[in-house]
Length: 396
Image 1 (cartoon, rainbow, N blue to C red):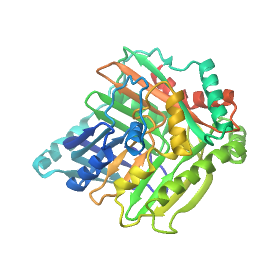
Image 2 (image 1 turned 60 degrees about the horizontal axis):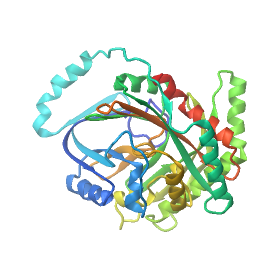
Image 3 (image 1 turned 180 degrees about the vertical axis):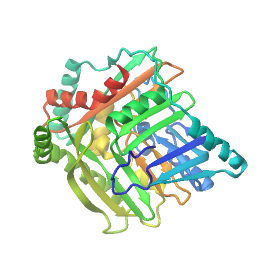
């Protein structure tokens, strides 16, 4: 996990590396949060892993029948044997007792490592939902909005390559270099890989404080300083983008209130514009203080899936999303992160990410945008293609 030296207010580390599993938890969505709660309370140690979007089926009476080419487990966490924490100019190395005699050899091996450039061939990227079908599906979602079934929903589509072979680490480094986001993550679990250039935090817990930072609102960057500033200003003042962000901010406020101390939920930042290498983003920050009767895992259960990747009302959005999308999201629009031994945690939102099943030779990335009553299907499609730009560049 690499923060790319981000000036992000709530960051604890420049980078975190967890290596090798001493114990692990892998499960489908059924009772997944209960299993995670028991695992976290039993180990009381650093745990790294992910929550896939399909855990929605554990928190509500929902289902998923769409195509899944990646076949990732719904939930996976592991207790690492070796941990590297980079903070400022200090690198802290933590090893489980039975392997701490490997520390010196590992450090020398790290210093001697030379990354080799990739020799993989460009991939033929296919689009799961062609543009004309995308326009039709967004039209159907707008009909549901106009009928009052929901106010906003995040609609996503998949791009994929079959019979694909990639150098995953090399592709991640290239993707990260293009974007340099604050929540970049490289994850490998046997044949499953995540290459994430995520700019978004889902949820962080530090003591009793909880922080969520949903992104809603995107505008392209320009090499021309005047045009770039104009794009940023336009995003800040765009009524549609602000409406999207405020609706999701309200949803997150409601989610956090379910486990918060009375009166502690606050919006500390509303519709602030942050600039990344590829895009400008509109981000809000919502905080709360955790009521002592709830655990951190219960906060995850009551806020998952995150509002920025679902919609409002959330359950209606989840059902309509399932009906209109053509693939299971899986780890995309889920979350990757870690627990500390004190049961604190930090999780990103899995967006701007490439997923790879090496055994099945299947590469996938998905993009989406928020559909509201003010949405223009053509412009929503353009926003999706803007978000896909970095992944296309890396893979093809």
